[in-house]
Length: 91
Length: 330
Image (cartoon, rainbow over all chains, first blue to last red; front, side, top):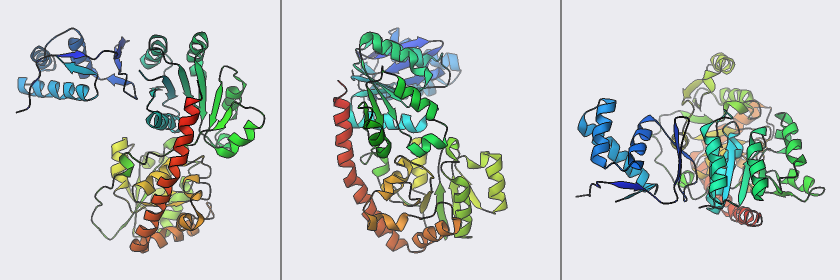
């Protein structure tokens, strides 16, 4: 059974900024600058603040008014994409 | 951290795509495509990156006054600066880009002027040693290279006419539509946003063309659309290379081109000949070249395979040149 990470942290050397309401990311190995949409920004800001995955998912469900299991799936899916791009790491 | 920061504008899709290809080839460049708004967050972020991350190279797609903050910062930090001009001489003239090319050539802060059009590069280099031919190199390892499952034969001939709305004139779209009509009733024409243009929509209606409108597509959607067609039309009036034509062949799709499409025309003559319509202003002649390819699928598969192999083989030398010029920036 695949593991379900409880916490992630931003990879070293990732450049990220909040500028005028937009969150932009660039990892050392990335080619293109990544701009997060509203839901991505929501997750990213809490990740940077050190929140664990369950806490982020519960807040996501409350804020966007979706079922808890949907929020958990969507948040984890997004975090998996960020992990694949080496923008975040487990732990 | 990659040593180069490459800046393009979303209004320069061709030049920015060429920067992405360069970044992929060298593995050593970040690419930032700036939106139209000069005060955008992406622009501020990119300037911060130059300052913060120790990039040693700045590469600019085309030329724009939007690049001034980057040039000032690069001068202050003594970074090596290159500008990549991807339009051919004919494109530059047709599109009214000459003032920008002149501004680029006048700017002594740019140490390397790369030009995708070899004839233009060679001519300018006789007077300005900063100029060098920087070839466009198709990605022969990436998505376009993978064969995708083709749709079942439905009796129609599926013909693609894919290009940016900014380029309908240079891409000779009106003649292409007339050529599609010349192909006949079996032709099903696939387009990417053309029918949102009122004038071209009227032409489509007048010609009673059967059109499949894909809208403006992501890269993945475009490659899927390529797998749905039997043939593409790329009858450009001016090109420095024509990545779109190359991508058709890489996807295993025949493409009819004008003599101004180097990606195909620069292949060995016997290999290129089946795809070239000698008169880009003659829809009937273009239609005949297309119909020959469409009506003989087995033969067409053979000539496409041969052309694809030649295209892939030709990219090795081009790729080596790209890497060399990039290395020589510092």
